[in-house]
Image 1 (cartoon, helix red, strand yellow):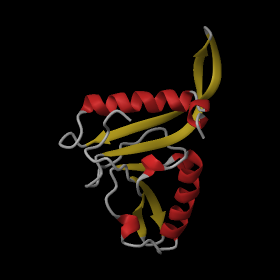
Image 2 (cartoon, one colour):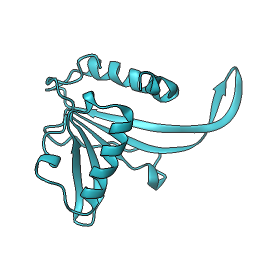
Image 3 (cartoon, helix red, strand yellow):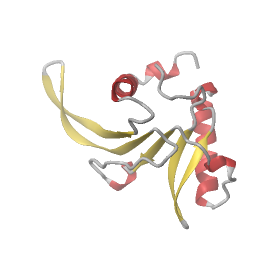
Length: 148
């Protein structure tokens, strides 16, 4: 959305812990995929990465990388950018927290997201706008399904 990369194609890198170490599986041209296709292709890529069977093409040129430590009960972490990715998004765990909803304090879950951006490739204001959109979509997931 809104000019997030210097290329027209949006290649999403998925950081995967494999037996041989951390690797990045790349979902190419993600901007042209439906949500269902992204889910299906991501699962297949992660399985290939864990099995050590990614092709060279499936490891090349992420423009945006996601590092998820949610399964480890991590509240917050700061991801590292690996070139050529312009952003690495760190996804922490969804943990119990107090939330104000309709002027009432309730217990819910909140999830920490932290982005590291390479300002040589992408300015911070553009990244902030993108992450505002991401936050809005995560808080209103039905929006993700519109047009699917």
